Image 1: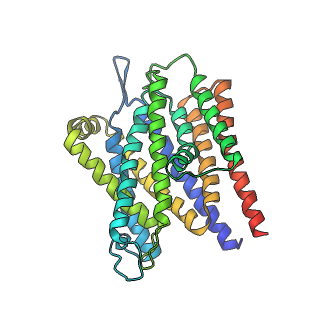
Image 2 (image 1 turned 90 degrees about the horizontal axis):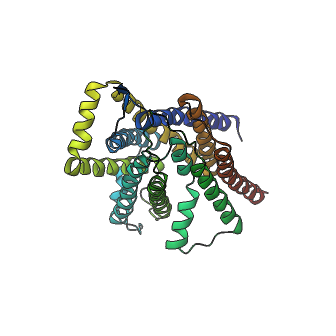
Image 3 (image 1 turned 45 degrees about the horizontal axis):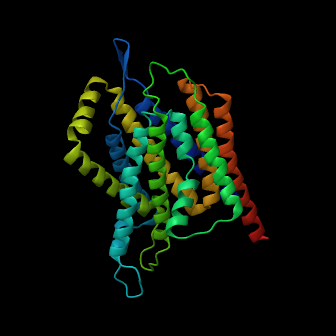
Length: 343
């Protein structure tokens, strides 16, 4: 690897770490920590859908700038494919983008709802297990068959999540938003993960669509997808949950201005972090991205334990080792396979 490429990789990985670690800390802060105590009762912020909507707007603008600066391309040009050689029309892209946006819009709020019933560390661990829902969707919808080691890795990940969620501490802090309804929380997390699997599988199909006039880039996907998520989420809030989300947040921010700072920083870190994700994908490969994101999530868990005073049982540590061990083994096999192909 050339020296310039090594520098670029180091820059991208540390950029991804710095932004998403900060993003993860703010995610836990906003969704699980009290902003005040009134008569010894904690006051939590309870409008995660609006936070997701604001982040989508930030990510759309950042994706638009990224597309213009890095690719000199209008991200929406993909919908105006008129060349005779193109076999994929704009309407086909619209269908795929709508499907991805709908699953993404539903997945994130469902995952946040689970935080009322499970610990943030369990939430973070479960969301690290994207392999499971992706395999399930490919197996059910596309009849994909996997090599034996994939099933072993899936088993290790599943066992790890079960160990982590069933070996929690019996004591519960008075400042915790978690009500202890683990089964409901895991069901909501499972639904969120399944939607993530549908989203990722549809993205895979989207990038395989032929279009010779306008190349679909990560920047285009980032801009268009986040715009759709913003529109869908905002529309849902205005029609069905204006008082519960918009007015509630306005009053909460008026009373606790720190929330506005947290939301804006959370949205900015998340949007900028997505740029580094797509930079790694475009300049290197998905294996390096998987390695970077898995290690980032491990560091996020350690940070959460240190900063927010979580304590883990031996069974939970065993679950963490099982999950990240399975994911790490999968990454090792991919790296070994790639080296053999290059020899």
